[in-house]
Length: 100
Image (cartoon, rainbow, N blue to C red; front, top):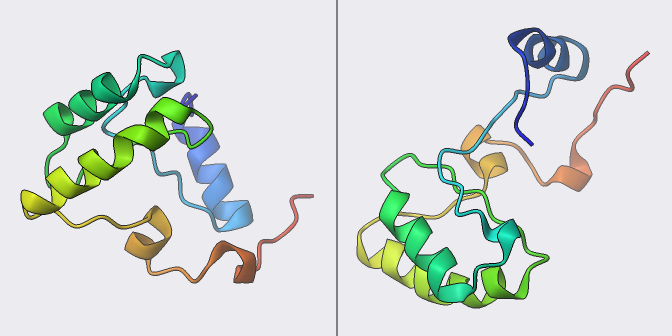
């Protein structure tokens, strides 16, 4: 739920080489308010550099994304995954160290 301490974030980075990246826009889509509300919350709160938290397990979130992404694109914003922003390859090709 995004509740990391600084120590936990450092430990993840040191032991697993995984940085802690949290979101700056939370549309509370897990409450399932419907696609229009999810889309509007994202559009109202998104600025350049924002990281948007969404859950692809909720039908309302899925339905909200075409309008949301089109509008963000019209505003000149580009959508990327966190992995792309970090310059990482696909997750399945990453080599994580097992914690001991």
